[in-house]
Amino acid sequence: MEMNELQNEAFLKKLKEGKVVQFAPMGISMTPFIRGGQDKVLVRKEETVGVGDIVLVVYRNNLILHRVYVINGSRLTLMGDGNLQGTEEVGMSEVLGTVVQIIKPGGRCCKPRKAWLWRHALPLRRYLLKIDRKWNKYIRKQQ
Image (cartoon, rainbow, N blue to C red):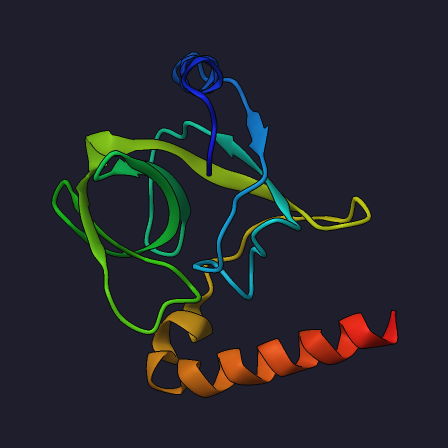
């Protein structure tokens, strides 16, 4: 997500105040559930965070939106749904907000799921993502 510094401060202030904020994530790390540059998300600071939630955190000076895979005390292990490997370790206090709604092109809204099956299909993910890319390429050609 790229924002200038003033937009970033206003965005973070709204989250800290408990308000729901909307933004359009960029990148492919949350494909196929959130498509960068196409979908928008609504994020809000939640009281609790659970395994399977999609959270917004600052990681190495970047805002990232990834799914919680493991909670160990106050430490979270995150991984993007479109990633085949690589995780991020953050503290619970570093969570800025949790995705409460995904807005698809055309305005269709959906509540984020915990993606239990997807999280446990990591060995198959490479093939599933390849099928997803080919399917979406085919769909775009048809439009």
